[in-house]
Length: 172
Image 1: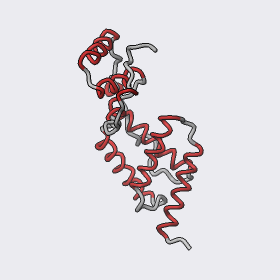
Image 2: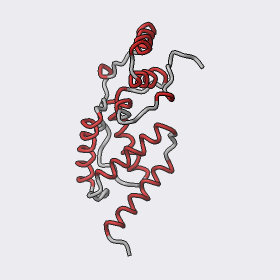
Image 3: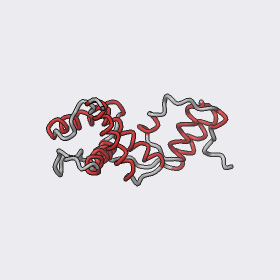
């Protein structure tokens, strides 16, 4: 017979798998979304997900924690909010927030114009001449794959072998 703690853990595992099986995203986005859901489940392990008042408080504090820890902007916070809400919907749990309570993103806050091609070329030239392997990786990830600063920041602990780093300006 399972203990209460084991039973709750098993139930959450079933809910996670239900969310995962219905998630249409693939690749990097899928991994990110599943990671966020797992982080949320870990954060709320001491909460009954049917207790709307407690869940409401935990969602709010989780969102603040994630913004502080990762430096997410409001756009990323809105995506995180939608992922957690989708987890609740797919598991037939009551979402304790109404319309209009999601983090709001206003136009002035989304001001990320693309870099001018001349600026990108200058950056590539500078990295070629005096950049470290770290600079080459960051430049490749941001210019070739379009990764954002917060996404690159999460890779800071990764080790990159020099032979795997390609200069984004060189064509194969």
